[in-house]
View 1 (spheres, rainbow, N blue to C red):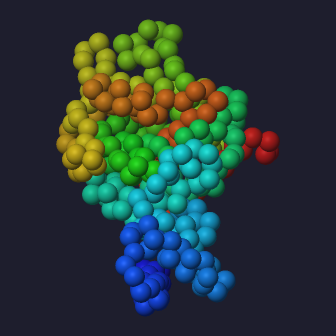
View 2: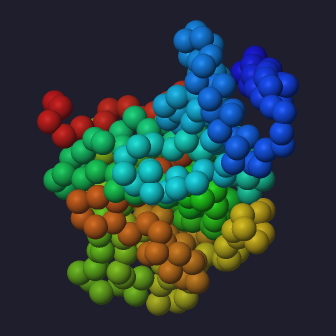
View 3: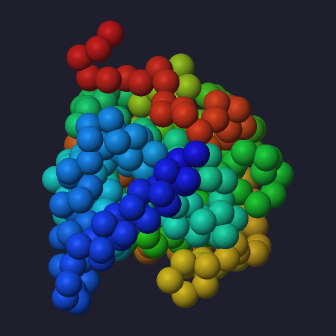
Length: 309
């Protein structure tokens, strides 16, 4: 129904535009006419257009819907970093994510979480932390992948680029406790230097922000790090990007003590895109069978919002 409405709307727009214009227009002029026509729609039609086009993004007005189709999100990254939300059409991002081996439910859940919490602060046994980068996030997919093929997707929903690589899963499974991968939403913090001088150090700190689900992550010292020991690395497969090779990667990773670890050659990508500052960072989402069962509408639960008991 939503796609039908959008098609009908744009047929109406183009018909109304070109039936009323006597001279040819360039792309910018056509966009201006479309924006004007969209803004003149009756209030009920404007509301239906916004809801049909929303798909977990912030669409402030019908003219913005036009922009998201005509343009490829101009200035989207800057707008997102100013907390204005994402106006980009998400359908292509979802297609690319699925093409690279991801579960679109995970992508939709993270987009919904960021949209709802972009201005909130959390306290997860660490202090106060918030989402600092609304464009880039990581999804560690573990749902249905209990023995092999656990993947990390680094998504930039502003530029549309997605990177995929293999990632470790906790040797004791999913949940809270020693050796387990904590499910749910985390925010990256700053550097973690192992006091025992482990070869994989330093890592990127992770703050669990869901009570009873992952709030022990900080105290346990769960960090993102290189998958390497004194005996060598235990991840393979390399990394693919949607810009050059939009497909899943081969290879696999061994098991960790609950930290998401990646192939050493991919470590620079994590530090570039996911390192937080201590008070703000990127969303790191561990998507497990628990989250998958909750469906597309899940945006996070048991959140440790600052100031809320």
